[in-house]
Image 1: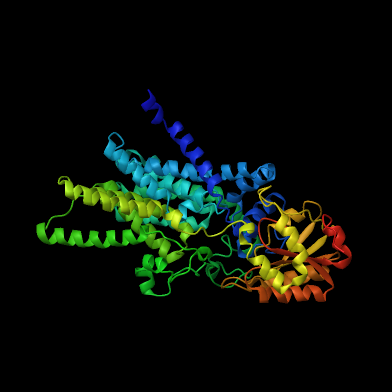
Image 2: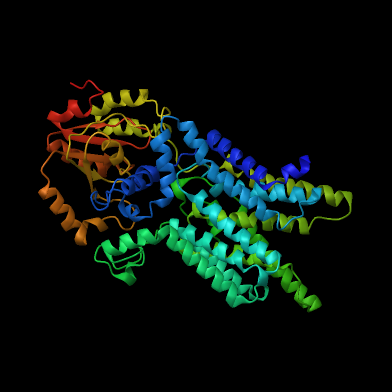
Amino acid sequence: MLNNLFRCNFVQLLFFLILGGIVSLLTRYDVLWDLANYHYYNSWALFNDRWMYDIVPGGINTFFNPLPDVPLYLLITFFNDYPNLVIFIQGLWAGAASFVFFKLITLFFNINNWCGRLQIVLAWLTGVTSWAFFMQIGTTTNEMMMTLMVISGYYLIVKALKNNVEFNLKYFLWAGILLGAAAGLKLTAATYCVSAGVAIILCYRYFKPLNKVLMFLIIGGVIGFLFTFGFWMWRLWTTFDNPVFPLLNNIFGSEWFEPESYRDKSFLPKDIWGYVFYPFYILLEKLPVEGRAIIMDFRNIIMFFVCVGFVLFCGYWRIRDKKHLDFDKKMVFLWVLWFVSYLVWLLTFSIQRYSIQFLMLSAIIIVQVVSFFYPKEGYVKLIFYGVISILLFYSLISTPYYSDFWDKKIEAEGHLIPAIVKIWPEFEEDRKFFDQFDGRARYVQVEDIRLPENTLLKMYDQPSAAILPLLNKYSQVRGVNMFISSGQWGNVFENNKWLDLKTKIIKDHDGPVAIMISVCDNFSLTNIFYKYAKNEGMKCHLIDNNMFFWILCVPENLEKSVFFGRNYK
């Protein structure tokens, strides 16, 4: 009876959910840059009808689908005073994703014997301790939500393959819905939709009738995509004449953006050798990663050698026996799906946090390979291979311990405060307030600031959009992004129609004007704006918060009423 209880899907799901919440509480990987830039703002703007009222406060990210940010926004709205509860619930996404991954693993290994159970445990631990997965548990990146949906789609495809494909076409319909919905929520997940389709086509002998399989998969994909992204596509189309704005603008030709397709290319390899030996380049820090983190993750390196070894093995077998190797169809599809997913990801983004799904697939493959070569006899061989296997899996499972997490709460970034004060000594008094600020009291914690009604906030640099929901708590404040400094699309919103729109808004505004400055590493650039604010006769202060380093400048006569919680002279 107890054994049947543990095999119950509900009990297993509950276990993984609780585990995800607990790990989220223990690690507290916040990753607040994107939250401060657009995750919090976009969902707030959706509920408060701010479309084109605030002008690109989150830069290009302002136009991303706000739907995946709604759950966290609601959590902050109702439970902001209970940060541990929010962090725990955020971890449930990782728990659910790890549960579906566990179910996927059980399709490849025998859960009814101890050897199979050990393989399942090793594969699961290897899959959930990759840098991409573990460092995003409980974070605001929404990657766990995408992982849950993509791995669920993969699970249904493999399950249909394990049974009789011809009589389980409904699996492909639901797999398509899940994959399409993931792509609709976050367009970067479309890489895994493409990978699934290409892998099925390459493994056409296992998916018969292929035309029906692809038809059901595509129909499901369209349904899921339109369900999660359709409303937003309509908004983008009616506003910018581009339903995926600013993507594919080289095709749609919107006058609101450059005639190119927006894509973050900052992490892509620079040459052919970078693509071929990408895992080694990352380990040797020859290519940039998010947050300049140190990533001690050997999964892709191991898979590099596995692929090379597999090709050599197949060649040797072909030359020696001149026979075709007979592999299990599930295993063949798994390997093809992993390779296609890795290749599409590498050519499209090469961004580490998008790699969770194919790293999970590689975990299953690694366990398969280790099990395949395990010696069946000889104590010396068994002991030697056992030691090697333990070292191998230790190096994989310990990845989070030896790696950096790529972002953190602002109190952990205290090294920026002395640099700010050194450039602007008058912030020494603000520094005292900042040092005494309790950033753990709320999930989103910002000191009370009351700008006058109908204030126009000129926002310089990113991230800064999250300040608008907080400032609008007491009065109507309109944000206009004046400068986008980061990335290859630095000044795109100073061109075309955006410049005319912002010029008109500023000219027609009849009310107070304030300036918001996001202090990044480029202090010399930020200093220009600060001097501009001083030349306008404004008083500037560093805002106490737990999200980012923000400086708010207001007219001198409004200083005391705006920063009412302080006693400035």
